[in-house]
Image 1 (tube, rainbow, N blue to C red):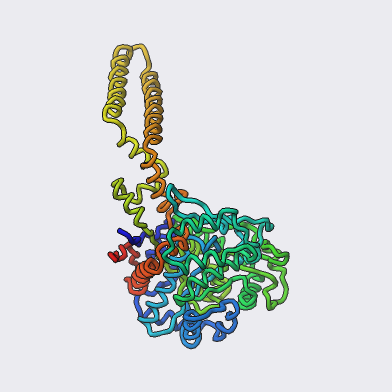
Image 2: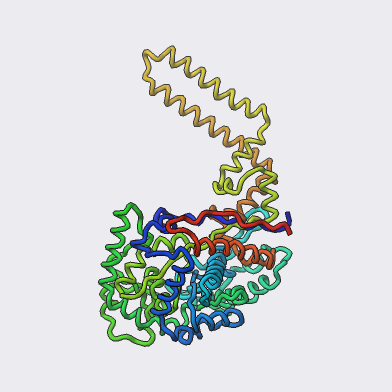
Length: 527
């Protein structure tokens, strides 16, 4: 057991997201092709509604090389793209960022093979995002639990990541290096330390790292804050500003439809605000409907506008021949509102498909789970497993004494209640019983806390496993650095991740209509 296992998981999500993934809401999501012929029809429709000059227009923002450049050229001549994206994160972000990129690659490969049409994967690096808190933190798995790698900033709130100077916390690079272990994947290790240095911006470091990791696989990386993207999207952004009132009404009506169907809209409506940001001062500010509507004639730069979350997928589809966007559970949920935006702007609605979801079980974590005889899911609760294990480590006489104490008290209270029941309300005895039980629980908790302190190595093993599988109580793929895992295990881990993503993509292309995508195990390797 010297190699990591790659396990395919259920993507999950809100009831709205899960219903969409199962194909039950075509009125909001449109029809997802279910076989190669339908995908071929989808591709032809996308090509017919896309600009023939899309690659020339966006080439400066893509700046692709090698395999990624070659795929883009073929797709530009006679094909389409599959896209996905994510906002920046330290050292490339969490595992789900890589899972998205690999799903886009696998879906592009599968579509190209089954339809005969060139398909290129494109990763939309959301460097125009201004949520620094989202971009500032990643976790790495160490012995004893997870540890955070942080970025710091003094930039004003609302500054896009493309303009935020990169300032790593004092120990960030050292913590990342330790998490990489003995470094089987030197190229991944070097990419992290060479791109995440002071003197660049958060956005530039992110784009540079992604290109080093993804371009050799054939995945192009688009820098969303590049002027070429603003220029290509200027017409749509200006139209969205001019139709701000109609868009607000369309989103409001769609949100009401979603609620009437028993779901919760993913994106809350904010009355009075438009779907465009203004960027004139160097920071992003969401314009009011009135401000957006008063913007005059179109400009080459879109008047310094950028898209909010519900407009961004529509913008992407308008400037790229996107056959499908690979999204996570939250993104899938808000695409129910995105289609209303596209209809109001009289442009094609984007199609969303679910990304692959995975957990990487490292050898040391597998050994801990086997030693403790526990399943990974038992680590999701931050305290239950420690308590369960501590209780199992209690001396038999201690556990028996606690049971006897409970039984004796129950028996004696019953005797007193029987003797005095005719003169004393039953609630008095019930309250007394609850009070004593509370004290026994407190006593037991203190006894177990003592066991936990005594079983230091046991609790450290639990913390190590939890730090890898549920850092900060969240699933691994949402918090844990994929780059540290790749540096630790090298190309063999990347190959296994690709296998899992490919199996997922094949189910997307060939599944039956309205059939959910089940979680299936990725074939294990013994080498």
